[in-house]
Length: 468
Ligand code: COI
Image (cartoon, rainbow, N blue to C red; front, side, top):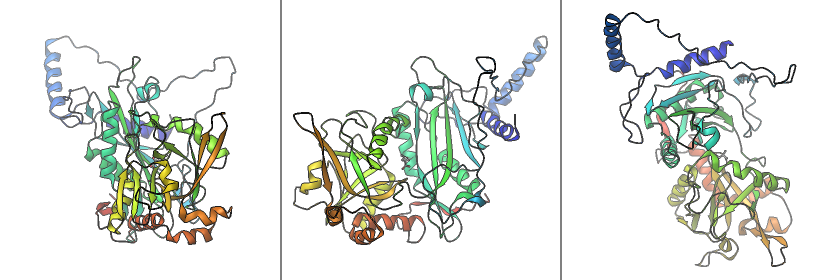
């Protein structure tokens, strides 16, 4: 066991012996287990002493070493077996904040981990490094997909402190995902504490105030207990990790073109599209890869029941603008993005009418029922922030089985597309008339502390210093 593994296991074993609240988040009655401390532990000790007087002394069981290091031997003598990768912790001083960080993974110092066993949450642990040393191979997350995640960002302000954008909203969404997949949701105080501690202990990875980027914070929760039959887990692991990031798409904030997925749906009509379950994402990988090879960085899904309404992009929500309105789909198979809620609020602040309603694909070319053309379209979400979409191609198959692409261009980008140009900086300047980009820029400014946070979206009010 190397030093890092040792400290991780020490931290994790501390977590498994900690105390917990008396009720569980899904209302289940708390079951006292062997990891309870405090009064319960005191009673156990008194009970044990009494037993010791009554009975002949028994040799206590040997403590089980934690984690159990599996013995790995090649199947065939001398056979090649991949050695575990010693994932290094990135030295923050090696990061060049001036070049766009993109959305690749930069490993950070460590993560926060809470475990809920038989309905009892522990007090949490800090785990150095980026690996999970003690997962049972029959964990329900691995076989039956009991897993969900969240994404939020922390920003460094001019006061050198970090502020997190709307973590309470992410907690509510995680609770919804957990409820749908019968998982134990972390209580709000543990969720917030994990986010705060993760940011504080990784403060060196929060991009400087005057540089682009943010610290992407990734809370996730999964069934870590083993089950063979299709049942919910008895144990849940809740982790908050993070990575410094820049722009999600290679276009670096410039408008992108989208391909509608004709062959696949993201969600079922009464499925789980509105929950941020891990299983909603893997099925989007193949269509996204196919689209990328055809030059589309982003894929758009239509409603799975009729394929006539817009749902959302694989990575993010859909927004459209007319002269007076900002529209976003109302659908039971789209995720309620925190960025989208915030953009809709800013739209209201600026005198637009925000409309969350079903959006027909035909409206994108024909305009809304009240005769307003759609001028601009964008993708929005924590990772993509607000990425303009200048063109959407829709595959259409005729009676002979031949598929052609129908091109949808939002009016605001028509000249550029008609001239067969790709978005350039000049086009971005022309796009200055794009109300969605303006709202996105305002949101970025609020997040960075460059505009007043009138809605109280940034948390905590006093910021995170890294010294706590
Ligand atoms: C986010 O925006 O935070 C997401 O979870 C999207 C993911 C595809 C990176």
